[in-house]
Image (cartoon, rainbow, N blue to C red; front, side, top):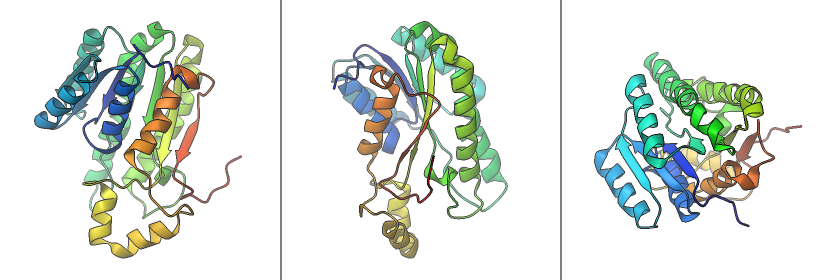
Length: 253
């Protein structure tokens, strides 16, 4: 299947590790030009070099998405350098934790406000695209009880409501908005590698919840995201696509 991504302009946050890295590498392999950001300069530079070798245009900068003005300025620079924006994938997350109220503030600023600011800043570009597409990375933690009353879970749930309502608001302008919610995803340096080493009982419990017997990989999630983001997924908007190999147990009608 031709996803229709060749020549599209995609901006992705948190794109040097895990799911974000897999997304930009796959989009580039499909012929999309890439704007990316992350927190570490060396990792951004490496990603730019490797993606450039695929023959597409790529721009990257180090950005702290909690700095709203700096973040919005980078988004505008990236869109200008690429010649527009057809796809926006806000992927940065503050992660979990229950140790203090700071988790709630950080999760709100990173998971929610970085997404909202990105959507609002890039919306004029997405509207001009004619095939504008936003794919927000949520989590199965948002749809079932998991781990405890964490800020991460609540903020990922907030993104589901925001995504659905935004899809209705901008649909008439030709912009699609969806969420992809991964279940447990294992990769070197990722959260589940840490859990395996430090909380083996939790890791074993999670593995037993997956009928297919394995956690997802960043590349598997990226393939779902790429389809939803692409013109090939043109009929899908306002959806929350679960990508978890059967980890969650809810029935969704």
